[in-house]
Length: 178
Image: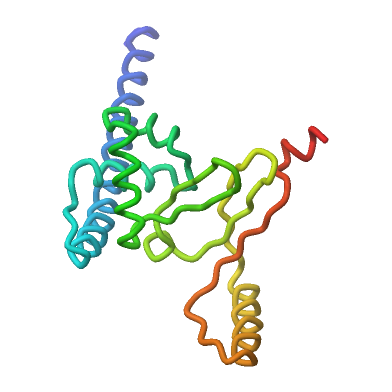
């Protein structure tokens, strides 16, 4: 075997491995999306709403983003969906408990899948640029927060259902500009 044909064989094997890896990733994503779609469809059914193709694409875009995103981000991820349609569908998904809207002040609204679909987490919100980052606390810290909030609620005669913690400040880029 010549050096050139050996290189070609290695390149072909690498390409085959990449295709196999991409197929495995696609299979995993479609399985994950399958479970997600079942949950979302059930929530929409409970609210007498349909799970349209546009709503399905929005849910997948939010799942792929894996972070809170703004409407322009969503538009670039789902370019065939008109802005008005995307916004209307986001509002419907929000009413059904599928999507959560995060306001950062001004005209900035971010969207992400609801915590019940994503898992419990909190946010770091930049007051300068509006960027939002998801953060997860370790279970010990989360338990201490839950306990402290439960005591405060009990002392006030309040029955807590859940909590969220959004920490406002400046992101690294905005802090460096000061």
